[in-house]
Amino acid sequence: MRIALVTQSYYPRPGGVTEHVHHSARELRRLGHEVTVVTSRFGGDAPEPGVVRIGRNILVPFNGAWVNVTVGTRLARDLERVFDAIQPDVIHAHCPLAPTLPLLTLLGAPKNARVIGTFHEAADRNFIYWTSKGMLARAARRLDTRIAVSHAARSLARKYVGGDYVIVPNGVDCERFSPARPAIPELRDGALNILYVGRLDQRKGVKYLFRAVGLVAKTTRRRIRLIVVGNDGFRGRFLPRLPRTVDVHFAGVVGRDLLPRYFTTGDIFCAPAVDRESFGIVLLEAMASGIPVIGSSIPGYLTVLADRWNSLAVSPQDPTAIARGILEIVEDAALRARLRENGLRTVRRYRWERIVARLERIYENRGADEASHPNAEPVLPTSVQVQKA
Image (cartoon, rainbow, N blue to C red; front, top):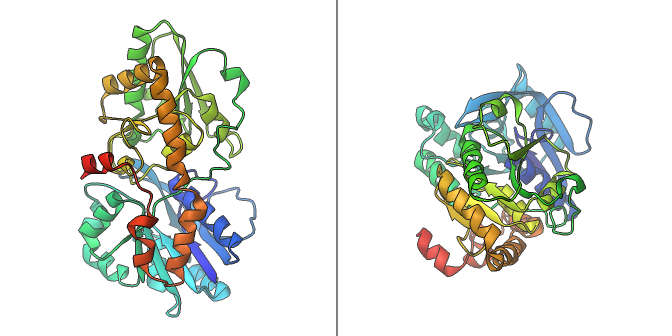
């Protein structure tokens, strides 16, 4: 098949959608399909086989984060030319109702192409969806199949545009992220390394992690290092101040080859997001690297987190709970081993080859029911599912 993956988030801009599109394209090509990623220009982009860039990217504050939006006076025309050149059998738009590039895709997709949309966003409400509900519902009718990466993402989409959705989660590259990756030697010096990976957007809750680390520093004599990997920018200056005994290492944005080594350098990984996370690929990356995980018990993260089985799931916006979790993992060797072992078990269900095999069935119209069958989905322990219900 000829497949066009349309996304406003792509390299060099990091993020969950970027990883989803990249790995989907890679696995689909391995299966013999002809795949083109259609995305924006981000500035300084090197030519890349299989990637077509139109318009240019700007960052817009929305939903507690900075989101990618493609701008340009000829976007619709350029998109039409791309589709004319590709002649896609399948067009897969990510965040399909987002302005501008995904929404233009729905409005201008060739009639003979099968159109798929994956909904990645999770929130209690969405202002743009609310103000444009009727128009977006009409645009969504062009979708032959609607996919959501989690129940949280499906809930938001259903609230505003209705319809039926197949749950196909994000995945993880278990070759790239592995306990076998060498740690960064200069950061393995006996300190307790607490790791955060991600942007410093408000919804990521990093300030609560800083406060938690401050509490930990007051209750232990062990030397502590907080490692922050991601785009710190000016936001890093507004985070809570830590005791002088804590070493804060801002790594900034790191390369694809270096990122897995930060995971194996960490002793504990913390994801303190407060809300509006639909899934959390970074949780899977940490588990695949063999590092114990502490994450907020928000709906999107509970897709992956199973409290006291593969992680510690703590209340959001609660530095004391995060601090207790850190100390418990440090002091309880059996807990550390259990979280590590079950984290590695969890990620086997999310390997990209398994996720993309399900996408391929949808592309070939072999039945969304098959792709969403309970036996095809990653399954957490029964006790955890009962707690979530």
